[in-house]
Each structure stands twice: as C-alpha cells, then as structure tokens.
Length: 97
Image (cartoon, rainbow, N blue to C red):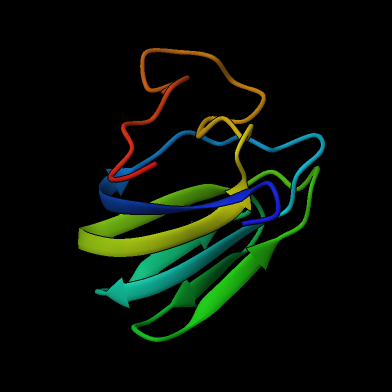
C-alpha cells in the first residue's frame, strides 16, 4: 500500500533496543499487552490501541506474555532497525503478493 506493508507478528519476551533512521513505525496491538521501552521511560499498549514510533527514537518492544501485533511501515524497514544480529529478518515471509 503506497510502499507500506502490514506485518503480522507475534512477540514474547524482550526484543532488542533499536531505532529506524528513516522510517516511522506503527504498532497496533490485536491481542495481549505490549510495552515499548524507550530506555528512560516506557509506554504500555493494550488490545485495540496503537503507537507510532517516530524515526530515530530508540525503542525496545517487550511482551511478558505472547502478544499479536500488526506493524505498519515502509516495505524496506528492517525489524531490528539500525542493529543487525541473529534476530534481523531481511526478507520477511509474505502471506500473499
């Protein structure tokens, strides 16, 4: 959609602190509770709520229990942003083309 993709993800545990140099990122919680850790503060997002993380802002998604999330972001966005490690998914699996 206009260079954007919708990613369906399940998260549990702590992700990696990272940021995206050129992309804003939107998390919509479908099921469960997601905490976004900003290092010095955090924001809790519940079912049916969303948050937009502006480009350049360090953040770490955390889920005490499994959470289902839709991500809205440019198709070129790496899941780990400026960090490349074993959790980086360069080519996410597509449900449909």
